[in-house]
Length: 262
Image (cartoon, rainbow, N blue to C red):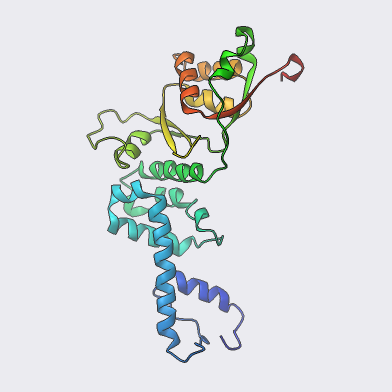
């Protein structure tokens, strides 16, 4: 670009996102070909790269709405949400909120939560590795010390609460379970974690979201159980502890001394 005018970089970036915008004035190619044609190729490559990044991050959303609709929705997202990092792994964080307000998807009120679950899976996949806590760590505790145990969450652990059956919707569109009519559209809570190489999604029983949230926030097992019971009187602590061990969602344990208590 010869003698760029102020604001040219912003114009260049905007033209990359918007196919209808003209090529910024002043562009030239070192080897002589028509710069407009080269710019169109570059613009298409950028668009396809961002579309590919969103498609790979939100495959269940794409499967639900179909490729054409997803491309339309993703293209609109790209036009108003350009990447803010050169790392494409970080692109798409705002996609779920965009989907929630996308007029053409207004009837699919649950679609944004499926996108949130998929984003959480992507974050879990790229989280730091850590050795999960062995079940024997609990067996080694004296019974009277169990309630004072404080756990450290796995770096990949996240929780999602939805007023829709989000875990079921995701699973049906991720080949985790067969497609079928959903008779019960009650809300579902999910736990997402990658203790080893595979990201796992667990549909949580009643009260377990409050329990795992409290544990992840630094409350002891006893305090977390009280928090869960306050949120859901029929909370099943035994089932939650079994899931805690099965999911391998924590990496360390220590027993809080009396002086550590809040």
